Structure formats: C-alpha cells, structure tokens
Amino acid sequence: MKVKILGLNYNIKLVKSVNIDGFYGEVKHKEELIRLNNEHTPHRMQECLIHEINHAIDAELQLKLSENTIHRLSNVWYQIIVDNPHIFEYKWNKVKE
Image 1 (spheres, rainbow, N blue to C red):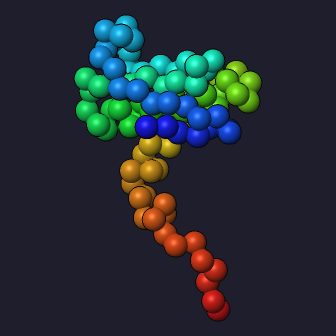
Image 2: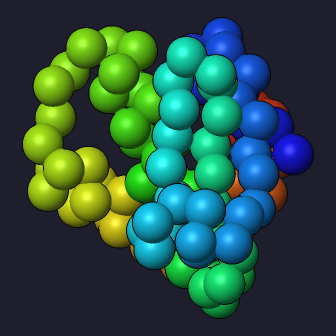
C-alpha cells in the first residue's frame, strides 16, 4: 500500500512491534517509508497512519511541530474522518439553484 504526501510516494508496511521498538509506527523520510505495528487493532493502526502522515508533512514543510502537537492533530483528523465518512463520499458537484 502507498500514500502520496506532497508529491512523495510513501510505502506503508505492516511490521511486528519488535521491529519498531514497541511503538505504534514510524516514518523514515529518506526511504519514503511508513511502518505500522500490525499487533494493534485496525483502529489503532489507522490512527497511527495519520500520525505518521503528519510527521511526513511536518518534515517536508519544515514546520518543526512538537510530538504533542503531532499527536493532537492526528487524533483530531482521525476523529473527523471516522465521524464524518459521508463528506469523503459526497459527490462534489455544483448545486443548481
């Protein structure tokens, strides 16, 4: 699986936690790689994916966000996506008045 972030194609790999020191995931910018711990629930892995995407955005844009800020933004974005799936499924055609 891949995700395109600011023109870069990051590979997403599911790995055992021993491969990433017990963390939920990590991003390797030079390799354009996101690794997720597959020993967690799908919910947790999706949340982690958004977290690692935020790290990639932070690195590419040189925002220098703190880990706490990345964590908070990730939780908010995940909740918006989960609670409002219809906005991503909506057919964005112009409304005729």
